[in-house]
Image 1 (spheres, chains in turn cyan, yellow):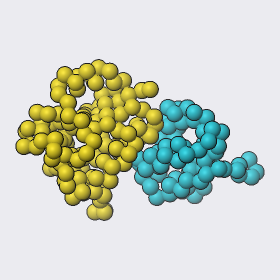
Image 2 (tube, chains in turn blue, brown):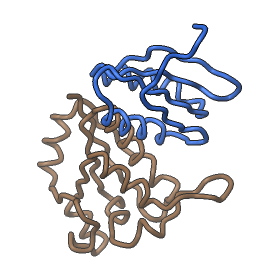
Image 3 (tube, helix red, strand yellow):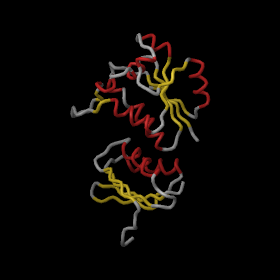
Image 4 (cartoon, chains in turn cyan, blue):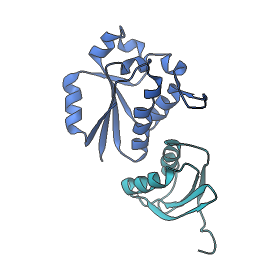
Length: 80
Length: 123
């Protein structure tokens, strides 16, 4: 994708370790409207499998992910 | 909704074991799982008023966080706290000595919850 997709909310969890990124993600998602997109930034190396598990269990959608330097980026859409 | 019941037996003498069941429970709650923690054996010590503020969960670099931070986070996420009555006795505690929002249950109620839960995880 040439340009980054528009997001409704950005959640910066850089430097945070488990369980904070997932806990903050869960709280942030409760404030989103159906269909809105949140961009999560994280440096926890465990965040990738954790996001996979979280979206599987909650039914929300992981649209895209990337890693630049040590920062993981996850674009998540509220679908549940 | 899926459900997990954690059993927490660690007390104040093992601070390195004190936070893990609580933050796993928080993570489960954040995954929309119904979660409870049953504090038994030495676990009720962690719920005594004033204890978790002082109990530091150690980190290798010495900059640990107080356990109360993990407890507050879990309760805010809707994790239910249960305590075993006989193990309160073991430590000379009563429910009045404990932090708020802890439900006292006995063995039968615990077993009933365990049978209803999708998973029971013991620490």
